[in-house]
Length: 105
Image (cartoon, rainbow, N blue to C red; front, side):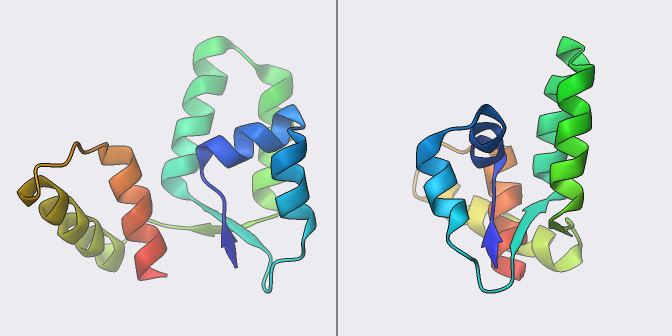
């Protein structure tokens, strides 16, 4: 299964040919995204009043498996965050939450 993040989904909606060539290759078990990614995308939809785009986005996300932020993914995310912080790396919390979901699944 191929996990699509916020940037990938935005590129799909914009018709980016580079991303289209990747998603046109059949994934073994389809595509998925996360509840965190859904939050990011719909925050932009509601903030900018993008009603039409919101409808298209809903249809696209409904066609994918939706992975949730649960106990296992929260612990994986905490482990990733701790490792990055200990190494002095900059941390984007949203990306770490998505990474935790990906690792847990």
